[in-house]
Length: 540
Image 1: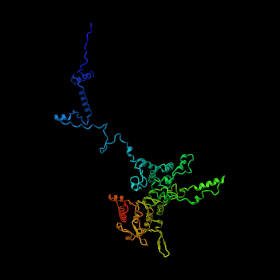
Image 2: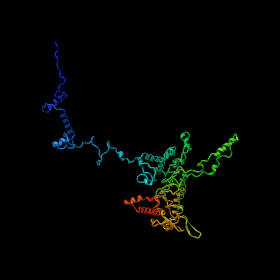
Image 3: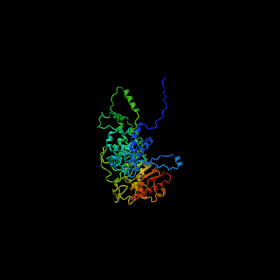
Image 4: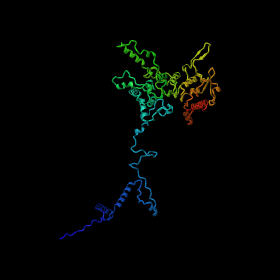
């Protein structure tokens, strides 16, 4: 018999009841809800879980509004109210974002330990140097213009500062790298940092030799140590060539304390070699030659060999030096200024700065454009003879030097100061910037005029009148020439801006008023002499 065919439906209708897993949980919870037997859908259960979660987390903030949102078009048709904005969510983490007393949000992460907060802002490197200003170092306006100074707190700044602190060790350890391997702008900054951060002492002659001259082999050096470096000494460039880009030399607070002008002059401008040493280079008795032809050839080669320029004409150590700072510490005539410390290079006490030595230095290098003579004493060629006098054959007592103890106060005589400044202006005729801070005692010599054969003085009461030499009765050399010799000078630093700032803030005194008055007087005097034909002049 044929089998009876059973037709199965290819597609079955899904069951309307919930799955077994949901049915069991629903049946278990139905008894707790007054015997409800109907099953709940997934959406109802999710809504219930959301409601339970909001109620459990709404301690102080309250339950969030979970009203269903309606599209704006339908809400306008049905005239339903707008859905209220959700409340701000509670802070993340246990206590929310950390804020300070002013409500500003603090950076994430744990609070720093108290030991970090008690440490100084700049750590160990914030030590206040000698001769420094209120900000921990000399102010930038007191430095030479154009001098490379790294940004405060940068890596180069911290490195140079630590280099200056341990300079006694670094000078010996890095002596083969300071001269030729260190860039010129860093060597210029290193000299300035030594004058600020070196402890103890200032820049010495040995320090300048370590930076500006090639290293020399010392007696205590081991022959087997640094053999390769010693063999490379012959490859070092000539100092005048290696230092051709060295233009800024900051020796602030070093002249008169650890370095004298005579030592600086001998270093930068080496003296000419003596003729006796060059003529007696060959011995008188020569060794016998094998033949007279060999000796004749050698003599011809020696005659044709040209003389090196270094043996005949010495070249300056810094041929292109244009910026020089020779400023002294405040109160240069006090006993605490000229210390009696000795240096490894010289075991004598440095002498106070002398205008005679400065004039000699200026004659060797007339190409300076920026000069700092801050806190220098009054110009005088015989400062030690200020209180000396002698009796003439006629029985009259005459002052020995050009300036006496009452020359400025009673006689109003600035003849010697004008003479020195006049000679200085003729030597440094390319000067454009001059720093005379702390020299208020002899500022009158900058605009004073000497008249008469007896040295009678006259100070321009109307410095802005701009009278000519014929109108004022002055003669050539009787005053500082601001039109020809120093006609390129554009800026003279008196500290005028600082005085005006103190005066504006109400903290000025008679000294600040005097600085402002004399600064404006010099501006009127120079502007009257130039009559708008020269460069612009300003006192700052």
